[in-house]
Length: 197
Image 1: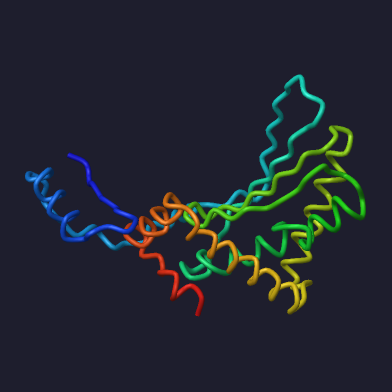
Image 2: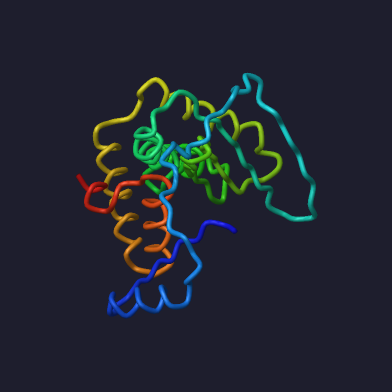
């Protein structure tokens, strides 16, 4: 009774594949899925952060900060949020990596990642428990600096290059290609040519 999408990837004879699907899925009716936005918008955004502490018997502490993204268009969620995340914590050139890891040696690793569909940005770091407060304060400072526009055109260019390279990597595996086409089918995502414009 569920909606079924069949994706076929590879050097195949399209006519034979279509025939095999039609013969083996005779009772399936085709339909056009709704084109409403699938982005989840937060109903309300928490002003005071919620703090959750879980204890485990491990040497390294794991810090995870989650941010709800409010008042962004679908385009901004698809593209701007990713570029923002790359500048903030997308690699060795990022603000968080330079400040928290290199300059202050407060973490083993640190990164940010965007989840556009859920309107969420997360920052993850491996830290020593004793450095929790200093690390969180530095992260908040870098987020505030981003909000004030304290990043350069060069930061934007590097982030776009990283983003484009990550898109090109999608073509390296069948699973990534299926995810790409599923996004186009379910979420009205742009195809690869449109993303590079």
